[in-house]
Each structure stands twice: as structure tokens, then as C-alpha cells.
Length: 126
Image (tube, rainbow, N blue to C red):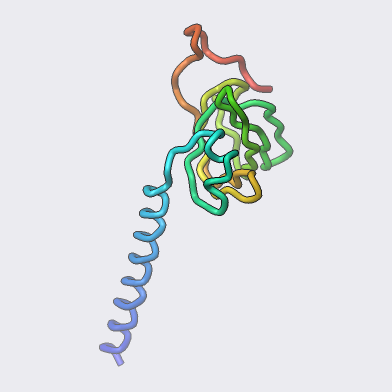
């Protein structure tokens, strides 16, 4: 019985490692895209890293809705989680997730550390 338990534990361990590897590869293979590319419809159902300026930020509890713009077009983003402390209007953000019906359903959200084009830090979001 001990040998059977060992084989079971090894099997489960291998499955967990393969699952973790799959998630890591999926996140690493996500392409950085612009809102214009997403708006063109090339990424429907795909996992992407959408980068651009955050606008129209609204927070309701743990749900954050906003748009990411690239000075040409914008894409709506829905993110459920804690808003990053440095999230503000016109701040450059990267939202990672899947595109569904032209909206990015983000599972990760990060804010770029650089200032705006005038060298000033962005205004705070309240």
C-alpha cells in the first residue's frame, strides 16, 4: 500500500507542475497590443496584454471599469480586484486578460512607473 500511495502522490505532483507550467506559458505568451489592434477585431477570444492610457475610471466595490486609449481609439476594460494605489486618469496601464465582445476582461492590472509627457506625475484618482 505504501508504494501505491507514493505513486499516487508523484502522479498528483506531476499534474500540478504541468498545470502551473501551462499557466505560466499562457501568461508569458500573451502579446502586448494596442487598443487600435483590439478594436480592429483581431484578438477576439485571445489572451493579451493591453497597454495604453487609462480613462473614465469608475470603481464599485472590487469591480473597476475603465477604458484604455492609444490616442486613436479606446477599449473598455473590466477588472475585479484591488485598484493599484497609483491608478489614475491618463496613467499608462497594462491590463492582462481575454477579449470578449470587444471588452477586455482583465485578470491582472499594473500601472507603469513613468510620468506623463510633461514630466509631471499624474493626478491622483479619488
